[in-house]
Length: 236
Image (cartoon, rainbow, N blue to C red; front, side):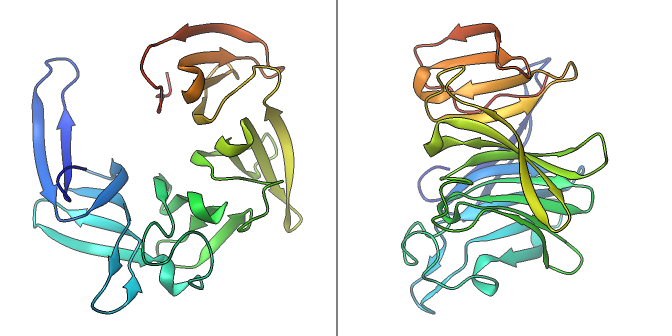
């Protein structure tokens, strides 16, 4: 985001060259992911419309070739305005969107929730947490969708304000916490976590200024510190 707009670009990591750029009139964007060569899904937040007195925080699927929005999903259609933060300012703090098959996984941080939304119907298929229930989640970031060994929907979440990582599995109509990492690694406002192929977890531990890899038992395999804040990490 810059100067009240959102700048998207694709970078060729081999050559260091920019493949394409797009500047969109979105005030604040925390995440955007390519869906194919022409479509991008965008987490559009801080989108209050003063003229209509409505908050349009939303998912946007943008076709950059035809320069048009081809699909949207707005939080205001599913939530009352007294949920989350200030309705006229940073209502949702919508910080992450990921594609899960044909659906989307969302992280409205100020709602203390992770949502799995059906793109075809717009309905919320799975909802983990509720506003103000900080025992489950408290202002989380960057959830990942996993499948348990039994094939159940599973969310791995950086539970930032609780200074921990949590994993929840869905079954029999409810969520069960199946893994937690916090005091073992002394996390401080973790911002991202990715499950690796070896079963370990890669963590962006932002206020400790480090990236670390931990085993399922919470043992630190390696860690590296940086003078800069660590926000996001990528799956290896």
